[in-house]
Amino acid sequence: MDIRFLTFPDFHNVYFYRSITLAILLAIGGLVLFKAPTTRLPELLLVGGCLLLMGWRFALEWRRLNKAGTASIHNDELIFASESGHRQIPLSSLHSVTSKHSLFMVRRYRSWSEHLAFVEFTLHNGERFYTLVESALFESPAAKHSLAAIQAAVLAAKVKSAAS
Figure: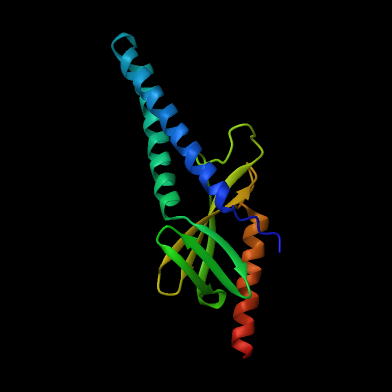
């Protein structure tokens, strides 16, 4: 299986760069407010609107990252570890697996080719878990190779549990 889950140290890199990205966004916001009295209204509205959109997306990804934890697949189980605890979830109990691109959560700033994607695991009872995997920039869906490998593992586990 070609599943490229992020490791525990990589998660700490994402937390570190998340704080740097927040500082950059706040600095940009401060500069916009500082220059607001001398800037024409259409330019201010354009820059302010873009900054609000970026802030909204950053807040959304911040929330997803707070729910995320490290994950791995072993013996037809999803092993999920986060600050709230450690869980072993049978793959046959997963209802769906989807992925979403990450725009602001990175594990290093120096490379445009290494991006991350959020993978969302939904159980039959509606409970959701997030983790991060490596992805390419314009890959559709996000992290398509890892997503296909996870979905194949879930399908194999469901077939195996139905056969027994």
